[in-house]
Length: 170
Image: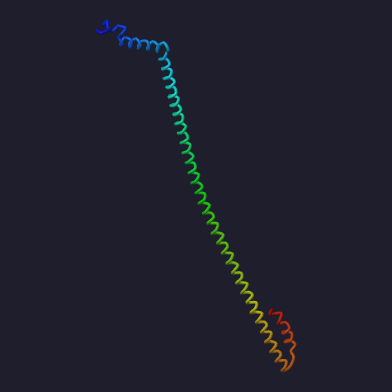
């Protein structure tokens, strides 16, 4: 075995000094509590990673809650829009029916007014025809009476009838 080789423990042997240096290095590392510092650094890093994971989970849950809220708001907005559209359609139908009713009333009023004007014009024409007929009858009666008077005598009944003729015909 080479462990018992006397040349290995010679102070001029470089391998001996490498081994001594390595042992001293490990002793200094242990005495300076480097493994504890490394473990503490690793623990700190693990806690930071765990905190980041917890934060990511919290943010994920918050995002899901926001997504659910937005979906609910969208559904509510869609329902509201549908209700508004239905209300607008009903209002349009109501306004259309109201406009048709007003148009029918307006047509009926104009028709009634036209009929009244026609009846008024007919009555006025009839009155004018009656007046013209009465005027002509009076004129004819005057001519006949004038011719009779020129021919002869006076008749008191005829005079009375002539005086009442104008009032009866009007």
